[in-house]
Every structure is written in C-alpha cells, then in structure tokens.
Image (cartoon, rainbow, N blue to C red; front, side, top):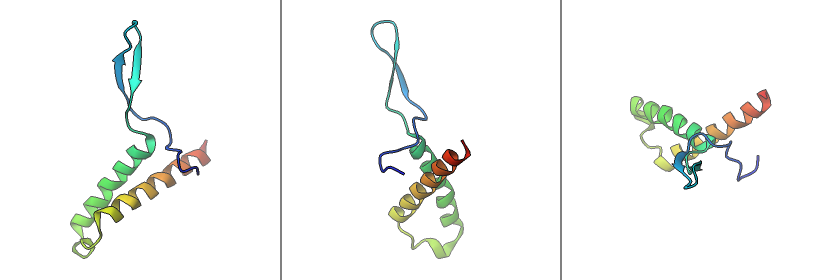
Length: 79
C-alpha cells in the first residue's frame, strides 16, 4: 500500500463557493476515521486492564493506524 493512500474521504466541511455551488474543504480520511475508531477500543482495553498502563500513547496511536491500514486493505480485497 502506498504511504500516501488514506482510503479516501469520509467527511468534509461543506461551504458555499461564492458562485451558487458548494465546496468541500478538509475532513477526515477513511484511514483517520478507522484509526480513531480503533483508538477508542484500545483506550478502553488499556483502562480495563491494569497491566497495560505501561503502553505509551504513541504506541497505541501507531497500532491504531496499523489497524486502520489493515481495514482499508481488507476492504480493497472485498471489492
């Protein structure tokens, strides 16, 4: 998978473009959305299991992106 592939857009800020149309600006990529969802599960697990508090936040964040990348790859295989 390319380092720049993010799975495509998931949300954007929709604003008027000044000529009667709409313009989508920013938003989360599918990769960022999946990583955030994985992060929620990881954070809950860490809070419920005392032995895992030693894990750094950076490690949990990295692992969340690894999960997101795996989800995107699995989705491409399903298509």
